[in-house]
Length: 422
Image (cartoon, rainbow, N blue to C red; front, top):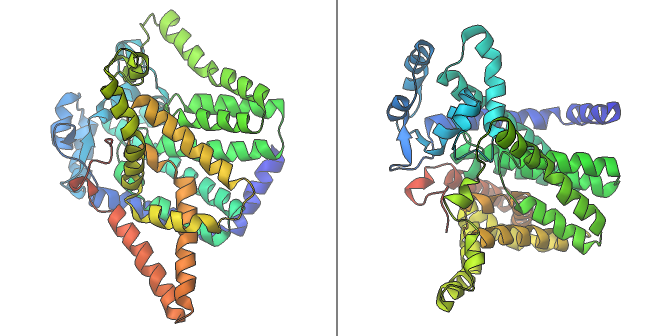
């Protein structure tokens, strides 16, 4: 452990300028999100003034609202899921969880509850404290995710590719659209990048202890965002490399946090356990009806699968990074790049196909592949232009990265709903 901490410290000291710049960009993004948010419209999106009657607003809430609310854009709205997360974070108990739609994924609300419990000791608990704690948690999660992403891409590509990829992540549509929403989306980014880092560490030097810790961490994180593409991805790699025993152990250990939570909910709290996505939205249920439906209904699901997946990928990144990723993929020199990318895409496709739901934000979670290869694609074209005039290299980079950042940080909800599906 001390050895790892020493390496982390050394890494920070050697890159303190780049790290400081990235953290500075994150602070800028946080403030810019409030000043110029990307928010939807309609019944699923409510301004703070309409949201407040749903909660008991206390004196401290009114003070904070009068102080801070005038500084926030009038276009800022909260997604309908926010209420559920905040409700659980303020009252993390049996009564609140009874019949709650987030019963099966309590981690995000628990983390917010834990952060909010510190100021609650001194000034009491209120929804303004819960909200501020959620935004703080989101910022911490994305900050750690960006630094892990930078570290990983530097190992796999180069420091320059890692830095530019990290900037694209900070100013991505996913971050701009969800950083200031008290929801579990930042936890999803953190789960993806941490899982890849842990897997890389395990692949370099495997051990039973590492497998247990690695599996438990992913299992716990999955209780915040049930992104099953991650275990699908790991199991596909286990099959490819014929490490079947490790794959089975991973599957078993992964389910331990779910099992413990299920026992707590049903036996200690005496609550009927259910998964909202299955019970109320029938996600994945269509597979069991495949032999009962008319053939044309099933055929449509199969025929739509690949077009929907590709369309959702384009919307998830708002097109431009995907184009450059395709151009730059051949420039990536790595031994297992093909199997890594194939299993990543296959695992995500299996999740979307199984749910029959192609969420734009889910497809964005391919960012560890798309952004660095997009930078390589930009390099390929920029170097070709450099042959004619060295200035073309810098002009091309400035125009393309600037265009990506601008498009990703406008209110793209006026064009399409980022949280919905294809």
